[in-house]
Every structure is written in structure tokens, then in C-alpha cells.
Picture 1 (cartoon, rainbow, N blue to C red):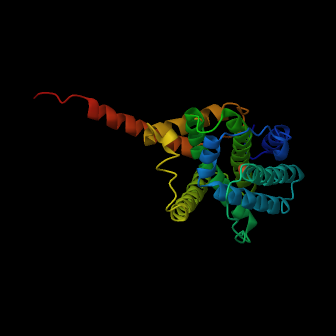
Picture 2: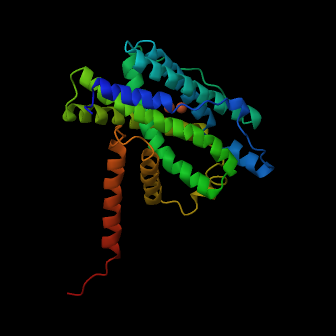
Length: 284
Ligand SMILES: [Fe+2]
Ligand SMILES: [Fe+2]
């Protein structure tokens, strides 16, 4: 199958559409939480940011879908828009059920260049998902919340994985359509958009630190899963979870490759560094 061909388009769109899961956030098996569980859930400092991100995602993806001429691509992107809006509904349902305090932020205007807005959003999703895969595994293993809660969020994680697989395939297909399908051109675009995504993420983290100043999340609640936390372990979890989740997808589909490669290089360097530090100095 040639990347950028009609066959490629049919594969990534039909795969996306056929793996849709039907559910209503209101009727999911939400667990009863004891007081300690409730406190832990309410102490998570980023629910407001997650809700805002999902709402914005729904608006961007739905707006972009309206501009697509190809009926199959449009149908798939439209479905993604629906799923993003449902993610926001799921977070809102959780906020309502467990009395989590959030302040709703007004939505900032979407970039008038809707293709660039969708690309920025897509690369942001690739970055967030790669880091989220590792964080999700660590949080789940620590038992920070009952496993029934993680099962609900597993649905969301799977959908995000589908979204980024769809996105990298769409990027490659579209690049060929626009005559920019050469490997160097695609790598240049990827690097540029990841850099933008990383800058936005750093900005969000900085803003989050200011907003959460005075709240004691890191000192108390997060210690449950921060015990024994190292950057290397986190990166290893991101890498292995990405590999595990991607292995469930059709081998012919493209998968996000930039961040796993970067992580692999970083991990090899870290291993080499710790090996050379451990090796006893030889007597001359
Ligand atoms: Fe989402
Ligand atoms: Fe998504």
C-alpha cells in the first residue's frame, strides 16, 4: 500500500470508523468512592485543564470537519469531533458526581486557519498521549484510585490512541496530496509542530503551577505514586506503554514515531551513562 494513496485513505478512515465504541458518560459504571478516595480524586489539580482541553478539542475538530471535501475523511474527522466532545461530557460527569471544584474558563478563540489549528491540536495530542500513557500506568499501579475508575478512563485512553494513529496517517496522506510527501519535508513539519506543542505544554505547566500555588497536591496526595519515581522509569513506562498500545493497531497503519524514537535515544544514553558510572575504575 502506498502512503498517500486512496487505498491508504480508505484504510485509516475505515479503521477509525469501525473501532468506534458507543457509550454514554452518564451511564458508565462509576464507582462509589470512600472519603479517602474522594479526597484523592478532588486533590488532582488538572481536572479544570483537562475539561477545557477536551472542550476546545471538540470545537477545533468539529470546525475542521466542516471544511473537508473528501466525504470519507470528513466522516472520520466528524466522528473524532464527536468523541472529543464526549470526553468533555465524561469529565464533566465525573466533576458533577464527585463534587470536584473547578472554575470554568472561557474558551479562547480558535485559529482562523483551521487546518493549522487541527495540526497544532493533533501534535499536541501525540505529545500529551505519549506522556499520558506512562503517567496512566504509574497512577494505576499505585492504586491512587480504585481500578474501576481507571477502567472508565481506559476507554478514553484507547480513543486518544485511535485519534493519534488517525492523525499521523492523515498528516502523511495530506502531505502527499499537497505534493509535500518527501521524507525530509514530513520530518521538518513534524519537528516544527512538536516544538510548538512542547512550548504550549511548558506554558500550561507553568500556568498550572501558579494556579495551584498553595495547594498541597505534590506534598501529600501525589506521594502515593511519586514514591520511587524517577525520570528514567517514567520514560521507560511511556515508551513501553506506547509500544503495547500501538501493537493493537493494524500493522499497515502508520504510528507516531518521533517521540518513541526520541525516548529510545534518551533511554539508551541514560543506560550508557549509568553503566559507565557503575563500572569500577581500573588501576593503572
Ligand atoms: Fe479527547
Ligand atoms: Fe483526542
